[in-house]
Image 1 (tube, rainbow, N blue to C red):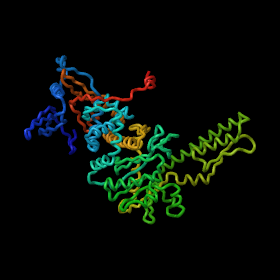
Image 2 (image 1 turned 180 degrees about the vertical axis):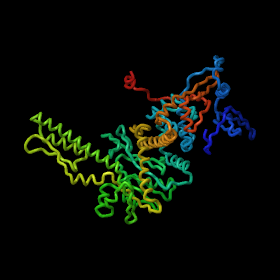
Image 3 (image 1 turned 90 degrees about the horizontal axis):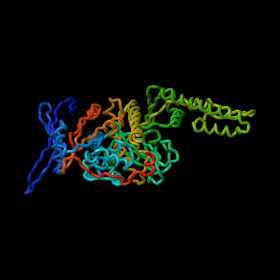
Amino acid sequence: FACNYGRVCYYTVVMHVVENKSSSKKKIYRSTLLRESYRENGKVKKRTIANISHCTPGEIAAIKLALKHKDDLSELGSLKESVALQEGLSVGAVWAVYQTAKKLGIEKALGTSFAGKLALWQVIARVIDQGSRLSAVRLAQSHAACDVLTLLRGFDENNLYENLEWLSKNQDEIEKALFVSRRGKALPQLFLYDVTSSYLEGEKNFFGDYGYGRDGKKGKKQIVIGLLCDEYGDAVSTEVFHGNTQDPKTFLSQVEKAGELFGCKSVTFVGDRGMIKKAQVDNLPEHFHYITAITKPQIRSLIKTGVIQMELFDKEVCEVEEDGIRYVLRRNPIRADEMAQTRLSKLHCIENFLQNKNEYLSEHPKARVTTAQKEVEKKIRRLKLDKWLSVHSKEQGRELFLGQDDKVLKEMSLLDGCYVIKTDLSAEELDTEGVHDRYKDLTEVERAFRDCKTVHLEVRPIHVRLESSTRGHVLVVMLSYMIIRHLRRAWEKFDMTVPEGIAQLSTLCSVEMKVKDQGACIKIPRPRENTQKLFKALKITLPIVLPHRKMRVVTRKKLTKQRINNLK
């Protein structure tokens, strides 16, 4: 294993059960601990793995028996009448994600209460296999959730829905605890902030409304989600807004959160163009600054007034300052080529469409030319080429042709690949390259949205309705993203995605050992080589045995007849 000082140490682990007894004020206290001793750099050390005092005597006896025969389970073959072995639940993925959540401080932030452990299971379940609260319950029936999380009572989907409300009520405390756990007293000097939208299934969500959709899902109500990250791109806080909320209106609450919840006295906010406007800048507290980009019309306005010149746009960054505001300019040649190719591709698409219409008109004498012309115009508008491209019909004949305004096209393409970043930070606080690079860091937030909305975590579509349930659901996704991000970093040297790594770990199943008329425990076999590599990259050690808790995890809602018929 890799120790904290970067050295590689080797040791042999010996696990055993220790029973302690102590007395105080004529009372006797007993405790049973699962411990392991190991030799590290020539010294014998011990540490406690779990407190199993709450286990029954039969369960403790089963654990002792498993430890006694841990090297050769075949020895238990002679105990056929008293010991039974059978396949247990999947344990690899649950243990890896749980230990990762522990390292990141998520377990501590959620607490050890039943509600906190249910919340942690919702986070773990979303990392392992995305879905609804119902699917999280079904997942707990095949994964060792209760054994790993030491849940002392069972649960169903109704408990998980209620747990979303608990998460919503305690969101500020959870986010602050995570922030302090990761940062300590080292407050960030910079926050990255962006918003996205996520469509809904149904019409009755508290936040649901029609607005500017980023999912490409027409005819669906949506919610708006804001994500606040620190300078390293690590998620700090999330917030849910109504679906018709404009981006700038979400910004002020993040400023208040940074000052009041996280205690920041001086910080810079980085937001995308259209996020931080004049109204938001005017309401920033003292010692709070901003970095953002301006729109193409604003760039043209600065060029027209002579503040910046087209000659300043180059591959290398350039800076112009006016009235205490710094403008950082750059032209990205790769992006410029992409925009030119996209425009050309759209033009070819229109030309092919126009040719098809002309062929149709020639083959169908009764077809109306005006109808075909309107269809071409509609397609031009849909591809957003109508500012410089138009369609006309010849006075004589039944043929359409395109008209192109080269002057307008040249003016539009003049700013291809050009962008301007705006900030009120002084050059002493952050140089030109630093301003440019910090704005580019917003890609970390965009990647977080991609992970949260699509392949890995599937925040969408949202099926919950209540305000608290929606907030709780989004918070679960954010906490899950923190784990996904950590797993990706740890496994980046392997040729596999995070879902593939999780699937690999899920193949590690326990062996359930039952002692006649007593209890049971679960023995974890030695993982395959590939699985061992994943654990090693995470610096996680597997336990040899776990106490087995037969908690009742059930689903209230059963498979519908329609789903059953689909499976036939």
